Length: 313
Image (cartoon, rainbow, N blue to C red; front, side, top):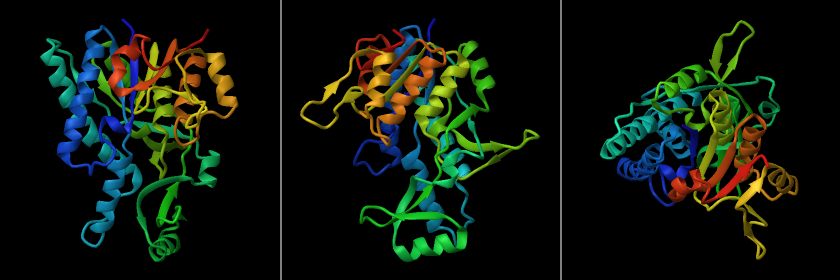
């Protein structure tokens, strides 16, 4: 039985143009749950990871709006809140879909911490925008009073930026692996995991940062010994010359080919770049197959019939 780590893109929870109501998110998660359940029905063991950007952004807006009545929480706690909220929806709807198919498989969410290096260069260069837009006066106030870093974003206003360090280790990896080996479907590493640093004596502490969800999915997939890392998004796969008349979607490619395209600069840093890097790392670290595909082709992608399918040779 093959083990799949399925890394869901934001469209699995919230579609472009939606406000993020509970009803919208429930509907999208239910559609996603159908795809996940079909993968299980095919005979795969599945671990699900997901993004949380819009949800954390909304929590931060709520924090600011109510800061005079309720103490605002830092980003690591906001990340934990979002993991619980999304995990609850995921485990409910996946369980419901599995039972519809006659599959009585336990589904559990693990609130996941991801260790990062406190000396990571990203901490000297915060670059990941988080939360809503504000005016210059508010940004200057926050920079002065809270020591935060803010930037003006393309004429749309000022936005806070935080570090995006490289994930090193999934703290709850042993628990997730044990559950998978016991036949459970696990939802974990939401939003890349809650960023934490470890002191020399092993003590963990949360830190204000955002971890790329696909790079964290690779760390988890490698740790549990998954056969396939399946990254699902809102495009058919990876492409060379993206957005130009010579654009070409990649089908089945070797690891060497993908690395060559990466070196040529075909994959944008804030978009397809981390997904491609995650696939490369997974295969270099012992994984068998990496796939980037659209969410609605998940079942075909897991069988190598859709998306960009990357193998070692």
